[in-house]
Structures are given as C-alpha cells and as structure tokens.
Length: 283
Ligand SMILES: Cc1cc2nc3c(=O)[nH]c(=O)nc-3n(C[C@H](O)[C@H](O)[C@H](O)COP(=O)(O)OP(=O)(O)OC[C@H]3O[C@@H](n4cnc5c(N)ncnc54)[C@H](O)[C@@H]3O)c2cc1C
Image (tube, rainbow, N blue to C red):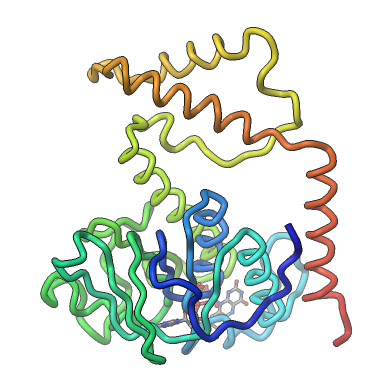
C-alpha cells in the first residue's frame, strides 16, 4: 500500500458505505481506523466547529510532550486514509432512516451530496442537530448535547447508530476521545460479527498482529477448534453448521493476523513517512 498523505476531498467517491462517520476529530478518525481495518467501507465527513482547534497545544497525549492540534489532526487523517477510509470535507445536515431504505441510513450534506450507510457514528462533539429527525423527532432535541447513548459502547436506542467522543458525554481530553472512538468502533464491529453468527466471546476478539508463522503450525487447527468450542456459552446450543462456520472464519482470521518481517518493516517505514510529512517537515 502506498502512503496516503492527507488527500483533500470535497465529495465522496461512492453513494453507499458500510459506515459513515460524522466528525473527523480524534474520536471520528480513531473510529475510522478501526472500521477501515475491518474492511468496512468507511467515509468520514468533517466540517464545522471543532473543540481541538480551541486547544493551543496538546501536551497530555501519550508519546507527545507537545503537539500542535492541527498537525495532530493531519497525522490522524493520514493514518485513517492509509487504512482505507475516505475523508470528505463537508458538513452533514441530516441523517435519516426512511422506511424505503430497509434499515439503511441516508446522509445529506451541505454540498448536496447524498450517501447511504448501514451504520453511522456521530462524533461531532458539540452539535448533533442532523440527528433530530430520527425516530420521528423523538431521538434528539436540537441544540442539546451530549447525545443519549450507552457511554461505554456508544450504542444508542437506534440500531446501527453510535455516538463517540465528546458528543457521548465522555470527559474531554484528546486521548480519551481517541480511545473512545476506538471503543465505539469495536462495539460496531462486534455487532456486525454477532449478526454474522459469532457468539459474544469470540465476537469481540479482533485486531492484533503476531509474527508470521505463529498460527498454523502442526496441531494448531485442533487447538483453535478446542478453544472456540470452550467459548460457546453453556446456555446456548449452537447448531453444527454455525459452529463450523464460525470456527473456519476464526481460523482464517487468526492467519490474517500474522505479519511477515517484510510487511512489518514496510509499515514502520510508512509510519515514519507520515510523521515526516505531517510533523517533522518544515513546510
Ligand atoms: C479551549 C479548549 C482547550 C482544550 N485543551 C485540551 C488540551 O490541552 N488537551 C486535551 O487533551 N484536550 C483538550 N481539549 C479537549 C479536546 O479538544 C476534546 O476532548 C477533543 O477535541 C474531542 O474530540 P472529538 O473527536 O470528540 O471532537 P472534535 O475534536 O471537536 O471533533 C469533532 C469534529 O466534528 C466536526 N463536525 C461537527 N459537526 C459536523 C457535521 N454536522 N458534519 C461534519 N462534521 C462535523 C467538527 O468540525 C470537528 O472537526 C480542549 C478543549 C477546549 C474547548
């Protein structure tokens, strides 16, 4: 993969996405890294008032003694784009879920773009008036925040709609907002996996890297099958077809967690390049 360097885009390249994220601050961008890595087609819309622009210098984000908020966001954008997400500089004006769209959300933007998405993450910090027509106006009262949600997971009473970052009522600090975006994206991914037949314990296990050759040695398949069987909740009886399907999916997934030395070196080099471009260069 080539290194994305913060490409500017004013319109989406598609009219349909798996995940649409409203707000490209720490929470929205962090969520986008996770959903993109799960191969969900992801678009982030970002325009409008941002809390981070009022912060003069970020001095409490792990690894940074002091970083300019603008550079921090550029780095975050470049990382999310590197993982495959699209970032569109446009303001979302409405999010609706018309019956005709069979559970999909429809987002309309200030520049008259319309996209549909199966899931939406609202990560717009101060304002969420674009949600006010959902549930016939009962879901969100315009002019108010935070938005009503389960703060730990970001899930809301509207299936497929999640809230991340400051908008959820989480304490405001950039590192907390970034962590919350990741947490909410993981809830969304867990929900997708549960829908696909994964039971809870295996549904939330995802996204890490191990050295190539770690999974797949002799006896490994039996070991993983045993492990998967042990995770099945006792009160549930899992049909053979489902057990086999999930076990196979997990075996394949674990193999994909393996990273060759070459791929690891490439990512390290790409990471350095992003830092050079967005933080260390004098331009
Ligand atoms: C004065 C001040 C100083 C601060 N200082 C610090 C500090 O020193 N250290 C620290 O860690 N934290 C600090 N914070 C807190 C920090 O800024 C927030 O915790 C963090 O920015 C929240 O991240 P977020 O992603 O939830 O929201 P934001 O960073 O605000 O991102 C939300 C994004 O959504 C966009 N948006 C909004 N509505 C829409 C829409 N309808 N369509 C498209 N895009 C939309 C906005 O433009 C914005 O880019 C400070 C905050 C303030 C106000």
